[in-house]
Image 1 (tube, rainbow, N blue to C red):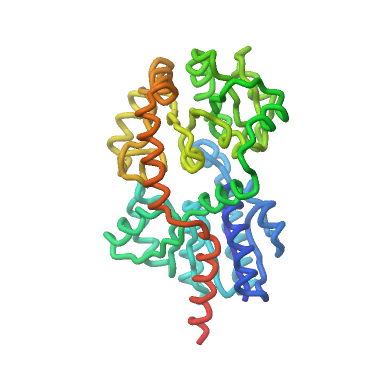
Image 2 (cartoon, rainbow, N blue to C red):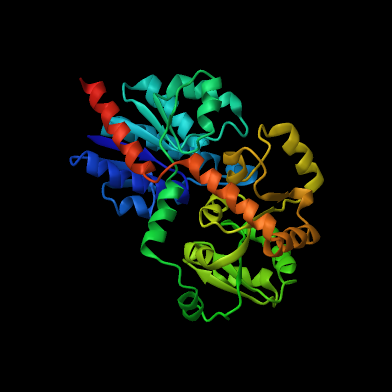
Length: 380
């Protein structure tokens, strides 16, 4: 069968590439055409456009590139019609993908499947109407989404979480070896505090300086910063300002595996840190902190921003967001997870409960199996 996939960012490229790998196992005649990245290209097929040509973050960049965005949409629509795939598979990236879903559903007879559903439970809940109208099947990677969509009378399929797959695979092939890690990266023998300051330049600029100042208060530990893909060492140097910290690139999982505690910006990194059972503090600074905190209460539909707390449906890790992210607060929380044994053990126990909620590895395999089964039934 012929599969057309659309992703808009690096995480989508990763998850879609794993899905493609499993689709090939389920369907040896699988052919792929896609808007995606290098990882998807490695699985074969034809890449129409790289996701880096699609991704514009923030109001001003989107406004400045509106014509390019619309041109990309038109190209995508025409290409789908020309290719005539058996299914269009959308991966997250709702602003672009829901527009494509509307076109495909109203202008063709091609089914639309959504893998990694849009996070409409956090905001823009009205998008449920577009999902109902234009998406035939929705595959979820977050267990709490099942109840959310059930409330809206829209059935979805929870297939597990691909981050569990990635972490379990890493652990299976990389046993813990602290000495090898510190030797390979010219680190000291002190225990490690990991710093995961985000993957975008603005996040790094806003979060890293205060994270460093807070963590530097613990001289018995060494600070190791996880360098993000696509961010140069020179960019980090602007915000390190002589702090005693080492940067490692391409080794985030290896770093987490060896760490005693971590300061982490929100996002998938909070879940990855929990899966490695590393006590953490979530740090996410934004300018105009008090205003953002007020708007967050009024606009967001959820109590938490970290995946760990959202999945657990309770505060497992402390979230220091907007006006609550101060050096003093970070230092206080970091001290607690380093030296308060009861707090550490309680957090680790909650991690284990969250991991049970996520279920076993095999999300990509299960999603691929369901997709192929549904398409075969459709052809009968």
